[in-house]
Length: 261
Image 1 (cartoon, rainbow, N blue to C red):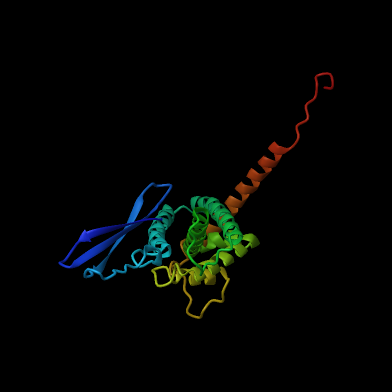
Image 2: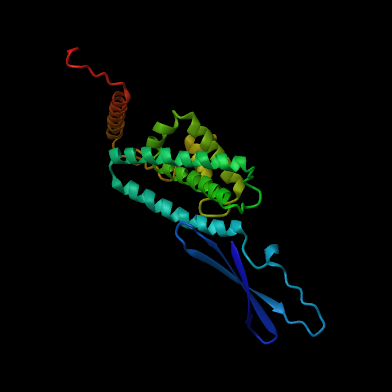
């Protein structure tokens, strides 16, 4: 986080202190500027002018508030990606893509949890300043949210994987708890996401009026349950064949000389 203070001439007798802060994204190299103005009374000669310090947070948004805005940008990208997956309208392809996606998502979530736990980071504590911990914080929050998007839009596919994986269950329980305490979701457009996700996964008891907002009256996102079940069976067969081929390739090879033959 970098900050600078600039004095500018404003109304007569008033100077405006303009504070510019930004957080540099190491991947995109883009700078995101947040600017606010603070009027200060010009003091007569001999009188001391007291200006709140930058460290006190008087002039700049906190790192947490800046992150919340960046989080909203990230959420738009995530939802756009999922909308493209919905429009694919091919169960077999959706199955394969979600399979790969969830494995990567939970690997990142597991690594992020390890870093945050090792750093004794409390979700309701001060926003981290260390870059490594800050990245782990954002990865934990964003991947937990993204998994909520996936399970609400593709509940059958996700349940097919999630319900048999106790490690994923433990990870997302931790992720939901972390997000709830972080305050990132409070008062925003995604405030209901964590609760809906927890109910859909069976982590929390479903309320009487619970309804998946993305579930249609027909068969969730799939018009024909038989087609979906067939896609699951076909994909399971493909995966088993692939696993057998890998085992054969890993097995020892015995070569014989011509004399032995």
